[in-house]
Image 1 (tube, rainbow, N blue to C red):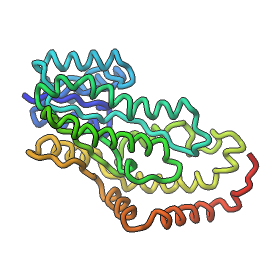
Image 2 (image 1 turned 135 degrees about the vertical axis):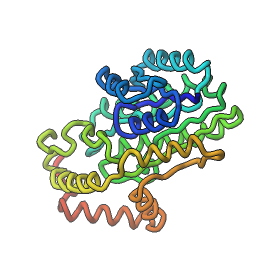
Image 3 (image 1 turned 90 degrees about the vertical axis):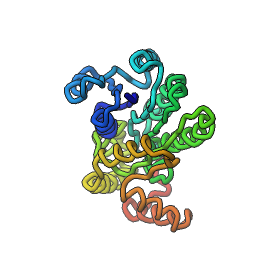
Length: 289
């Protein structure tokens, strides 16, 4: 029986992936932070799989989860799916250092720590690593800089490791979704990114009109977002293809964004975006500090 460790399996893409692999006969170690999420996973997983406590920012929980996986799978791991992630967005000047650190602690450092801990098991099995990135790791929009920066970092890590680990028989694959209907939409950090009353008065005055427009845009995007199963199917293909692709782009909107990036010169793209922001909130130059 093949074995897989899935991080961030409490909901969304991780949940859909854990269930898909479990139904396909894999021994799944589904990582979740809360006891409630673990209990929910135990209710839906087969007896061959199990929920494990795993906060990717906690070295002790990483070590315990990987040790358990090694013990129960004969010192081998066929797949690691690095899915755990959070979203930090908003006006850059309003973001705290703690929020920025948390963004990278989960999306980048946590991914790196789990991967490093799993490498002996993956080498033993000639396994595969699937990193869940984002189309935001290729194309960046205003007020999305922390999240996009973390996904750019994931893409760089992925592409370097793909070459570095291939001599050991370990394949490294990046899945890059567009907008996916997951609870991350409701967990945007810091709280109040789109609640302008949560910003200090000066920042609220500076960005209020733009943030309200972004909020309306996000609501429309969320309404059209693809289901998590769209991504879990891509992950399944990446794990089962004899020769997996380096990158799997998922979602119609992701392809549209990449086409926009490829077809429109950067200076034109940025000028159009800046023009749109200026139309929403004119006379921004010379604003008081």
